[in-house]
Image (tube, rainbow, N blue to C red):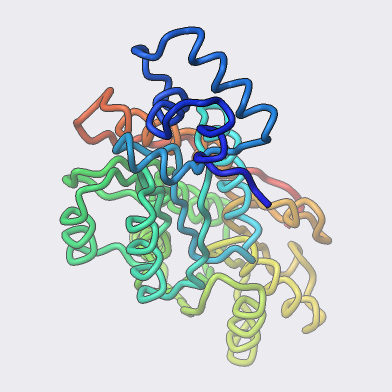
Length: 325
């Protein structure tokens, strides 16, 4: 049976309030009393309740992290950066996965707030004006991670999705491709919209006709979207909204006895580990996912500790990785 704070108080011969003051490092506790209580804590193996301690101090050493899809290999890299940075700064992590459901996301936000988290790092599926206004009313520090939106009270950390996508499409055009299709992520996801817009702008600027298929950020979606395109025609290049889509598309292309890149070139987005393991190896936009996570924690902790009150929009550098596809 676990020792309680009252067990410690009885063992040390002091009041429960005195034990609480020792746990919370109250400077008014006399040294010999502090040592007596600490000795009892050690002998009884007592572990203070972190949530109860946070409530007493009106602070929290817990950070909430809400992810849209934990099965996508990109997001665990961000989560690892967040976890490592949080641990270094003395914070614990409360992780929730929404499966890209706005209602589930809202439910987890409310649950985290009820459990007194100090702040929340949110990778939101849908980020519009209504959603931003909802978050603003909650009066808790938020960092919008891997999403970029200005003129809000929230910190954001991301890459420039538009710029990265535009560069990828221009690279294909400069290689002589004119029939370039785009396999997009969901239209309501901000990063997918920005990548889609960059593709369209690059194509229109070079008087080329866009060819877009909209799906979700999964391998299966890439495979099915590519099959539907190949049933109609054969593009010479594919720009996929993420690596999972690109890998699914590559499978469909090869099943049609087409060679990559000789018949169809493919560029992905994210640079997950599987991009280096495919055959041929996938060319892609490399996103500093781990560093995005670290930066998000640094920004959130500044807010929690009151170091900074103004919003900061941090844009990290991406890189085009040319491999074999």
